[in-house]
Length: 155
Image (cartoon, rainbow, N blue to C red; front, side, top):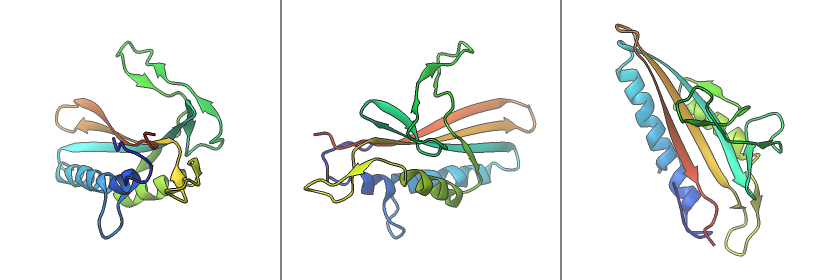
């Protein structure tokens, strides 16, 4: 989570620049490095979603109708996990794939002009990376999620 006032550098901390990658890039590079390292023993499927919460409305930044309101639900499988029915997921193979998806989603993000920042984000942005793995020798299946969150200004 990146938290702070408008203009404090939350988005920069999460995204960074090509010369100085932020938390998102560093975490994703580490994830794909680990996947590559375990490729002989594990098979992975990695998907990514992007959403925003603006004025208490959850929106799919990658969907065909980004203005459509989505809801958070409890998984019907009894796991106690939460999910968002209808949230668009794209399968990815690399950090570059995720960056392309995220760039597309960011074009749908709600921004406004403020006195501190010409293109200030007015919403909470979520990059959701889901990793599903199968141990090739045992058949053991596992799923994990990485949520990278850029919060709107705290004021």
